[in-house]
Structure formats: structure tokens, C-alpha cells
Length: 302
Image (cartoon, rainbow, N blue to C red; front, side):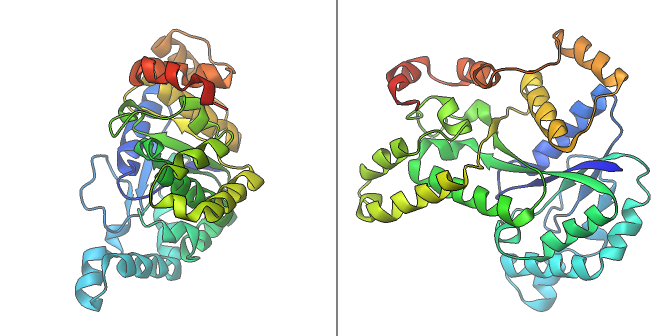
């Protein structure tokens, strides 16, 4: 069985940066890593690419030859890959027993509505790949109630469509308050606590307050499924990276080897084990969030 991560998310959420950083982190632990680029628009790669869809098809060629825009071009590329999935299998067969990171396109419709990407994943599962979907969401969405609700809906739709184990990541946690202070403590957003507080924030918005019933219905949909939660990540922080690795590996049953565990101990000088949810995010709050804003919003954290 071959283990791997399918890294998806909106444009600019940090997928390529994640693959680069995660490959270095796991490599330092002693894990044998390969990266597969499945984004035909990704022509500047900061990492060593073991399999590149650009050897099969590129977005620029599709746009030039078929006169399609970027969105239509990406859909065409995924449909082309699905029809030529034997090419992908031949390339993957060259990666003997490696742990694989799949760097995927940034068009969210590929994960929420279209079926080609889902069908490609189904083929991988038949080929004895044990995969987890790592869905990155830019943490700056937390600073805007409307954007956060939109991110939650997109995340929920992706989870239902992709149909493999799924981990949601709030990326760029070190920049979490770059676009404004958060209305609530960080655990409100990572654990997606009582969203009625988000509704209160939306009622203060001159646009959203017109759609009070619709907003309430959208929030009810998210809470009724009760599936969405997040892990906060700063790609440059070792402790943050380790928490993501532990969460991802647990979801697909990957067990640390003896060498990896020793390297973790040496790298972080701490035991690897379970932690309470608050402890997982406490260091993020202390490092990157305004303490005063936390105190002011402490009574709103659900």
C-alpha cells in the first residue's frame, strides 16, 4: 500500500508552498518523499518534481490552441488526464514505495462540482493508494464573517464530493490577523463552534443583513453536517508542522517508523502524543494573535 496526501484548495491558499515545506519536513524525519504536480498551470516549481502533468498537457497550450479561458482550460486538462490516466499510472509506477504529495490545481469547481478529479482519485484508490485530502484555506478568511461562511460552505462541499479522508488546514497562520483582528478566539474558527455568533457579525454588515434568513439557513446546513473543522498551520514552524503531520497520518493509519520517531524527538525535544485541542492552537494564539483582542472576545468563543 502506498500512502500520500492530495493537496487541494483555492488559488493562493499555499498548496505549492505546503508541498515544498512538507516534503522538506518529512524528508528530515527520514520519510522517502516524492512530489507529483497535477496542476497544469503551475510552471514555476520550488521543489524537485518527480512527476509533472506538464509533460502530458499544459494550461497555456490548451488556452492557446482551444481558445479557452483559465477555468475552462483547467477543466479540459483534468478531463484529458482522466482519459489518459494510464499515463499517470505509468509515471507513478516509477516511484517505488515512496510517500507521495500530490500538488493539485486551484480551481475549486474541480473539487465541488466537476467529476474528473474525483474519478482520478477513485482510480488511485483502486491502485492501492491510501490517500488523505489536505484542503488548504487561507486564514485571512477568518477576519471577515462573510468570507469565513463562504469558506466553510466550499470546504463542506469539497468534503462531500471528494469522498476520501479529509483534513482542513488554515494556512498562513502567522498572518492570521494581517487583514484585521479576529472577532473571536482562534478555537472558534478551528473547531467551528456555535455559528450563531457569526450571524450576529453578519447582521452588522449593510449587505449581508438584508439576507438574514438565507444566512441563517446556510449556517444551519454547515452545523447540521457537523463535519468541518481546521488545523492551524504556519509552514515555517516545526511544532505546527508536526501537529499537521500527526493529524494527517492518523487519518490514513500511517505509523511512524523507529527512525522517524527518533528524528522527531531530536528535532523538537518533546514526546509525540495526544494533546488537548486548546493546547494544539495555544502557541498559534500566543505567537500571532493580539492578546488584547483575545481578551475582548473571550466571552464570544462559544
